Image (tube, rainbow, N blue to C red; front, side, top):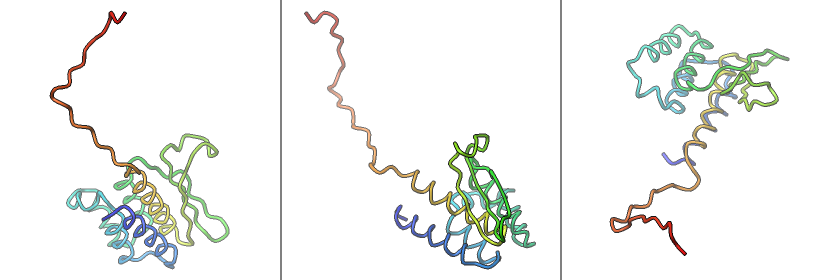
Length: 155
């Protein structure tokens, strides 16, 4: 999948999460299928089994946190707050920094699990963009006839 299509797909997934009224098994499976890069390669691990068992018992917030732990090992939950009928979730790579120095990614929704998944989708968009350089880097092939020389006495 090209970077533009992957980004568009993740943005559409984020919109779908925000439009949902509650977390459901089909939505969580769609999130795993469309936004998770590590999950398919870890199909038989204890972490994936834990996520799937939490989805099976409809423990949506726990499933979202377990999925984030599996997919985003460098990111941590910085803040979860409930304000004016909405849950606000902030994910950060350096949560020990003061708020004003940190560049946390936020998600919000009336449902706690979907707030977590909204922030998760936003991080996936950011990491998909950051993983691909704007200009491809290719190492030049070494010329077999090239040999560096030292010139101490040039004068």
